[in-house]
Length: 450
Image (tube, rainbow, N blue to C red):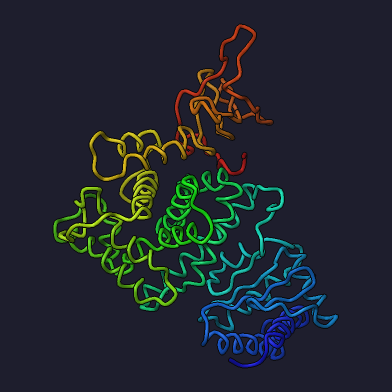
């Protein structure tokens, strides 16, 4: 490890300052960027991530609080906070190009926030930025936009973990832990917003959104069972990595339209063993992760796969992850089929006598997800169309709905918020939800109206 923590901060501040003064090709800017990247690379020979952050005006590097530093560094810290950046996390494998993108985004004119989203769009995976605590945490609700930012960052980091494993490297447990910490905060503060995000079907890459969705759904189930703290995060960690063995499964098998041939299915089934091997070889990996990777396609009667494993009791986390895995897979759009509606999925998963799932946990999950989850588009008995904005705590059939399209099929300029549980002067319900509908049929993104 070279230099001191304060030296690292000074180098990052110098690189950011150089981007404000010089063009990207200028030697002084290139030298400043390369110096910081080189120091990070040396630092990361001994650990998987490096975190540079600020608490108030104090500087923090990893778990070391350094105080305020010089006047110029105080200015640097405040400029970061002005851009909604409280920490910069650098991951092993960082390059000067990654640093160049970071300093350019931190100096972008007219765009004070959204640095994390822009870096993700640029394909920067080894530098992430964010807050030390989620926005609005003090109010007890992260909010849909804060949840969306955290979710997007988690998906980007999941892609990096996948690529690391695909290249034969150990997936970075520090990066996985960052994902789980951010999701755990939302599970505790604003589960409704997170569940709405996991329900969307229009994300581009199923593999990485599925990783995050299964982690979020599994943590929500665990939290509802009273599991919290480090154990909740360990459940999330195992859920996030449950399918990592598929990095060794050929894409033509993963994405094949239609049923797999017998020999193809044999190749597919190997991912549970491959995943357990990858995770067992990964330093700092929680012991639960390889167990869940190995077990998550086993049923309650130990049918499923891998076969012939002898007698064992399935881990609680395995049973929770299995439910989240199948539920999210069935509702997601895939190359070979459209996602199914939640009501249809619940019917399939709840088939009488099916040994695939623990029935007690499955019933709790159905209650947790709800009949019409927040973000679901629904049609009403009045021929109006809207999006569910809140669930009734006692009657899942009567949610709160934001009406977007009137009975004539015309889009309302100002949405109308209605509580379908309210009665009129005659004691009747004037509005009732008839069924969930596909968002594509109304061409509206539910998150833009929630």
